[in-house]
Image (tube, rainbow, N blue to C red):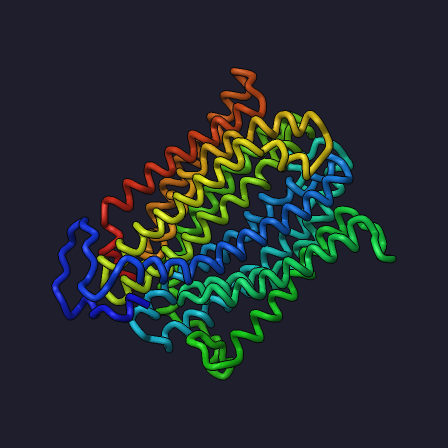
Length: 471
């Protein structure tokens, strides 16, 4: 890595200027290589994971709009239950990255063990709550009929059975990304996706002698794939001489300092995620009130848009890891140089994806369903999806850099304003007072994206992230 070739910032005088002048022995090409080496496995992994999810919905979509709605209504409750441990993973990634930059593997592995302990406790509690309250959660999300409610309930209950394995895998993934090892996560997550798609084929429609289980089969296929990913991740992290390694003899006794570091970053991230989930839940409930067909259309468009998330999120992994490692080495100049170049690459990819969504959105939607009303309305919504791409990519990458620096409080405040206030209430206003239907909800989404991108950019340009200390 180029970062390994520069001096520790504590040994030299660094100007806190905003210019992008590189150290004498470092070239732009070297930085782009580091960015791509970390980002491409994440982009491939996240994109193919979402494509597997799309295939899942396409298979389920053949059962009818009710099945698309049933699964769609479980997404936000599941994300809400994931909030506790996923937000702590943000702290784990940032701290592991800093210790990697500071060349302190002992502390990095301590963070790994403490993070797994936190995740185990939180995920078990969340899975019990989610299983017991599955039906009320799906009903609260706005199930329009008994068939949708019953399908969503059993789907969510099965998801809760495999919840802890998925949670532990996500924590291993977060720590590996902190040290820049995104390839291993790509391998076990892609393996899980292949298993998921295979069992989708076997269990949803009842092929090759397997029983026809419809939405139950889709949920079972997902948790089988997640369990396979956990096994591979666990085997990897417990063997070999890699930088991060799990040794049970080193113990899982709570460490006050390590837990404080994780929670210092994780709690604001948790607040951000909770705010986001509540905001999205209000938004989704508003859309669900438009009826099963409208919500099914929305769910298909969100599924397609989620593929575009993978571009921003994949490059955000680079931004988070390289920012954290640079600050661990006390080189804020290298952090800024990495982030600006990451943003340029993400922008190019986002423009290409946006063009595809705008001109061929209807064709993509027709892969999910043959319902003409869904395809017609969905094609219009895909224009919104395409136009949001450049802003969305920049926002993800800069937010990833801020998280890598430990500046999660600012992201929480921005999310509160845009996702909890602007998006849902503007959607309610446009739908109920201007009768704009589903298009009104997506106008609200665009406004949310524009404001969030602007606020994140201003926060990054402020430069206060360079001086954040995590005790």
